[in-house]
Length: 408
Ligand SMILES: C[S@@+](CC[C@H](N)C(=O)[O-])C[C@H]1O[C@@H](n2cnc3c(N)ncnc32)[C@H](O)[C@@H]1O
Image: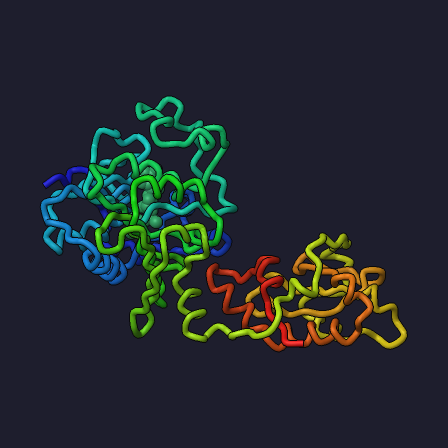
């Protein structure tokens, strides 16, 4: 059994004693725990979740128990324990943190001649505001494992990149053959439309079946929106993406692999298909509002308009210049996203929570249409809330506003 690298110190039981919270509230914790936790993205996957995702993995392909498996960042070892319970006996692992293993190994220093039938786990995720949580190519200039062997030319020139993406790229180089699979817990944002295109392209070179799984459970001690992605090759699902959302039942949608850069968030796909997302009728808003940028002053100090009072501005005051009124839609905030009003940029100052749109020329002087659009958006605020379930804090794209439909 190749478990010498996988000896982990803590069990799930003991790691639960370590509080996993945001840095602000853990000032009293020992410094080393705080920095390792955030620097190394230490969110350990609950054992019940590991069991479920391994069951899913085995549903789509048969993995004999004597295959070579790598867990590249095993943490408290939950993936390894479940795999062992299932009879797999050739498991190798890496873990960088010496408080979790007697044999700390940085996955980026792990020799590339080691090849596996299955690479599985939950790599660290970069937290956008924690500089230490990124991967810095320059940190590996002197590594015995050349950065060029797993980084793209573009990435070699970048100062930093999200670490989970580099875990994927390096893992691709550890695959034994065409029959090998890669299965990782990933942040749900990985599958937002047009994100991580370069990484998806590399995945594409090796795999033609992708399974993306999300459920309604919390996967770690801290709620981070994530999914389990299986990259593999199967005859039955060649060139297919299977998007699975599980609540009390399992809901599966199948897409052609050419849709890889579309939004493939299982919960959103499920909501759209099952009518939980408000079904809109009519014409898209892009027929009424302009795509030209509207210049406006924004200030968090001097603003008189915020998400709190925007609903007081749904009518254009009598005797005012109709053309001066633009559409302001709240773009962020769990309870406010999608609220809107009509604001006068000669008088009003907004904070940074809004997208501001002008109306198309044929509607700039049309009070009735402007007010009707505003009313329809506010009536359907739930629509914006539902299509934003992809990330922790709700935020919409301009495109979401242009695609909103109104019956006028
Ligand atoms: C999100 S946790 C997941 C741990 C485990 N796979 C699980 O599912 O519970 C990520 C783990 O990666 C480890 N890690 C971070 N950077 C690493 C690196 N460069 N090489 C190996 N392990 C690393 C962290 O210490 C942490 O234990």
